[in-house]
Length: 68
Image (cartoon, rainbow, N blue to C red):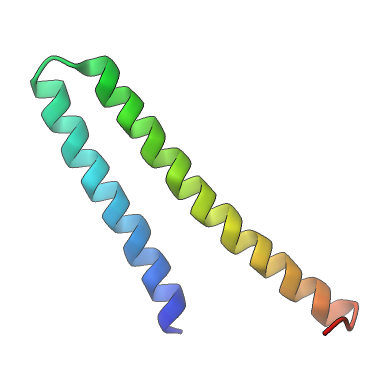
């Protein structure tokens, strides 16, 4: 249970940090770098989610195919 909550906090933390960095860079006039930062944050969160989905599919596979 604690692991699932930690994932949500990690994703929320990444989102907040990326939002702050994006805002600061945009105020400085560096919109291209701000967009790149947002894209990197999105990719990082996507990798976390894909890793968890992979674990989920492995667990489902082990339950339905009876592989320990």
